[in-house]
Amino acid sequence: MDFFDLFTPEAGFAEMALRGTVMYWFLFLLLRLSGRRDIGSLSVADLLVLVMVADAAGDAMSAGSKSLADGMYVAATIVGWSVIVDRLGYYVPSFRRFIEPSRVCLVRDGRIVASGMRREHLTRSELMEQLRLKGVASLGELRRVYLEANGEFSIIRRDAPTAGQSTLGGD
Image (cartoon, rainbow, N blue to C red; front, side, top):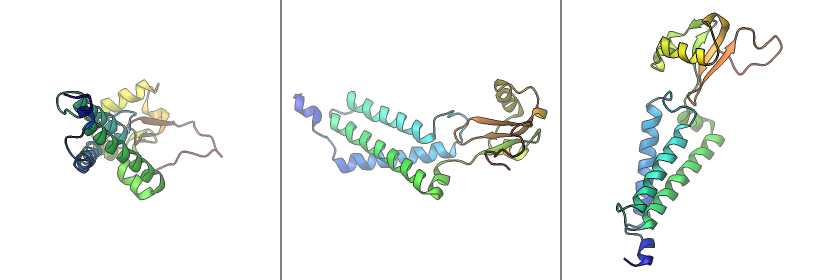
């Protein structure tokens, strides 16, 4: 194989862009529908880009494809979609609501919100584990607990904030 053959695409740019586009949106929707707890602090889009770019680059570097250009086209398409989705989420609030789940209230005034727990398929023991990790000894200490869009738990204790201070939004 000639050195320049490594950079000659085997498939056309349009085919590779289409493959990258279809896989991006398929995996994005699949991950978006699967929930957020297992993703942690990475957003769905961040995780998706990491996985897909690694796969595209891996195919180009292995025997899966003889051309580096094919992998480069797919990786560029995936990163391009990531940039577009990120910008649309910033400038178009209705699109942001589609790509990013809303926060879910899990505890309200020291009581577990059963509907929020069911919505996220979260057990009481899983919630209590997360609360202990955040230094909470009992539900009575809490005003609100939310499962945020990024999968993290945010806690608002009963004594905070004091009168006159703004809150991060309430239910």
